[in-house]
Length: 269
Image 1: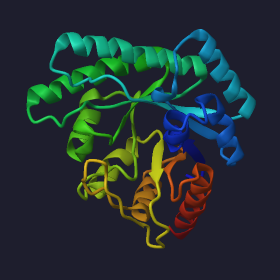
Image 2: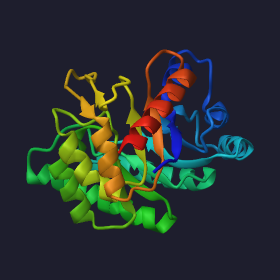
Image 3: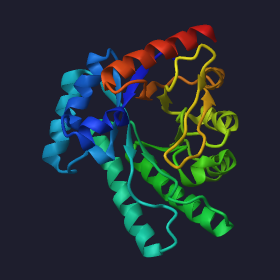
Image 4: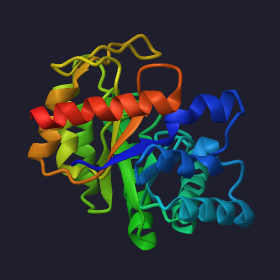
């Protein structure tokens, strides 16, 4: 568990807002930080054209890095409207083929826009993930669930989804800074055994691992990073720790600081 990577969202400001960088430069940025693993983001793709995908694959090859995952932020697999859900599922399936084109090992698909309160609502999510898991097996690209809204915010529902989908192609992407309302302990306990990759957010260089954080929705997302890392280690997690957020406005420096800090925590557990 000593492999570090860069989650693409670390660079969302220069790529999406400041327009001073593109995803084609992300692999080289990761290499400059001394990591060999990067994660891409669907929001950073200007298109899925063969020309763009070839350019991206060449950039990845030139940097000498691997792509662990594409974080896909589109579609609502929990949508009540069956026509909308069908359209979204078919669009999501295309990302498995995009992943194959650029050499990504997995894609992350969100569990939906709202937290389910009925068996019918949860059933739609289960059916959608089952269909996507079949596509994952067909393409050889893993399907991941992250604690990133909707049903995935509830550790009990994540466990239920893992049990009901029951596919080795359906894995998790725990995000250390996305467990809401004090659920981090139960959340990482559920997600660690099936973890394929991991997003790490650092908000404080606290020796005990305490990470205070409030989400955009105003909900508390504080967690004990040291204990999370200990749980991952106990689960024999062997994937990368991908830095998604650090301290400061300079992305490269914040990533370097986060990597140093997480290494110190790992040495202490």
